Length: 66
Image (cartoon, rainbow, N blue to C red; front, side):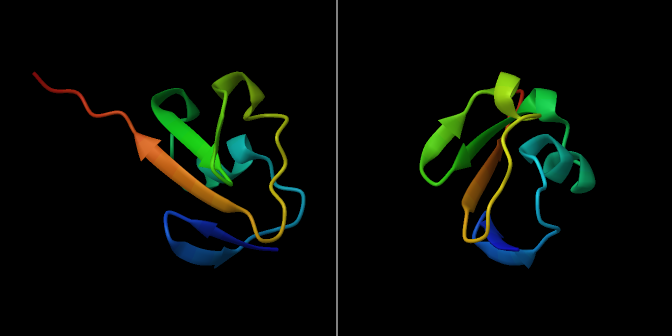
């Protein structure tokens, strides 16, 4: 399937969950926010939300500072 992640088109395996995609990219699911097709996906749903061809995903990382 082809999806767009942070503006970059990528080809990924069919049936991939958001959690699996994050881990494959080296992202810790505990420290990111994911938006899929304009909607924020609750972290509790990462493991059960399957990506589909044509999805647009934005991954935002938490950044500490002060």
